[in-house]
Image (cartoon, rainbow over all chains, first blue to last red; front, side):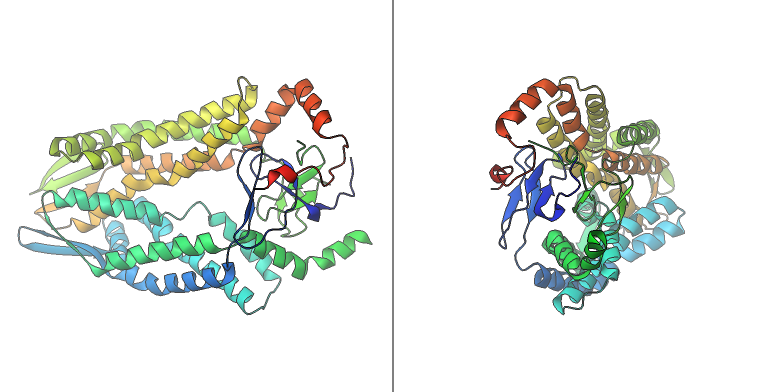
Length: 216
Length: 230
């Protein structure tokens, strides 16, 4: 077993563990594994600027999306409308704590944390103020990768609108528009963030000390 | 083709940095996180979460998921009877969406993960390229079964007109969310690299012949991965 392999020259596929030379990519190029076909490394175009702008827009749209009513119902002369925030209050009020928890986590908390995380990281990269705590922060950021479900919630809104359309008068409010834009912003900011680039930069900034320790 | 494991390297699951494996758990030199070369006890965890999800899926289908009160009279509906109502009203696209999201997807996920665990453990008729694609599809499908939960949550909130009409969530909704979350945990704890490891281990003579043809030197030199990029 060779312990002196320079690990900086190689990449391994995350899905099948095949080993390749590290490719030098320009912006917009991506390298694929030729054993299983999954993406090895991707350099995204203008990653920091784009994720900064999208996440900033997402955080601004967050308030109207949560607080403005999504849709209203008129039945037998009575009118009632609800926003995403009302949704949680009503669910807690009527004792469905588990659904209230889930809606809060997957449709409000996780998207907000992910948006502000992306904003935080891209802010420090944009103005070149790297600091060691970003290493831990970005590692923690990856834990939330699977748990944002805004797109599922959007489909849920569409389905329940169909359901209500059948026997009530339905009105769509401004909140739905804001919600759609919020969904687009959070998806785009997650897609624009270039993980490999950020890790490479962080390693160059803070990894030297470790390497010197190893060599000595 | 050589793998990182054969050369004593390990890939950090968080920051995708290759490290020389010196101890398990290994500390990543870039992000300082601790990790194992393969996910630990991956197959056991997947099997356990999967069984739990399957058990929770039974009451999720038997109990009512939504109770509609009209003028004080409650009308209970399970997942399947709710779909039947849509078909009665002629709303076929919605019926198909709900049926796919809340019955087909969880079942396919549970059965698919059972099959993957079985194949990765025994190596019988294992096709890693095909099976890792199946795993990706299963992983992608995971959150979409939360659809029914969100629909019920929205119905409860929006249709709240006091005595005239109101909607309450039934006990099945809790079991259903448990099913969905457990299948997501199961998919997350499965390690697709085990499929490739098993394939290499079961086909050792064949694979080593191929490797000696394509790789004259055992050291990873620059000729190794040129074909890999597109």
